[in-house]
Image 1 (spheres, rainbow, N blue to C red):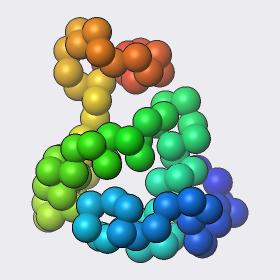
Image 2 (image 1 turned 120 degrees about the vertical axis):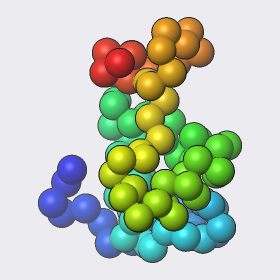
Image 3 (image 1 turned 120 degrees about the horizontal axis):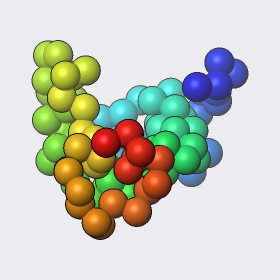
Image 4 (image 1 turned 90 degrees about the vertical axis):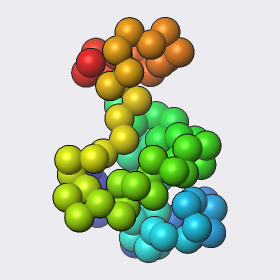
Length: 87
């Protein structure tokens, strides 16, 4: 992660993702992650599967409940090669 990350998102707005639950700083970090190979399509996943991301946000130990697309076994629909390597 970039220690000099933006404090404000470039494109995303709070209302864009799961009912406005992210702060601007969090949105800026999500945008930065989304631009990396390992987390490409992160924004799309949050937008298309808000249920699992709301679960993550509501979990008191969220670090044990991070939605990870590469945890789906040999799912051929996973096109992110970096995610496939992490499986």
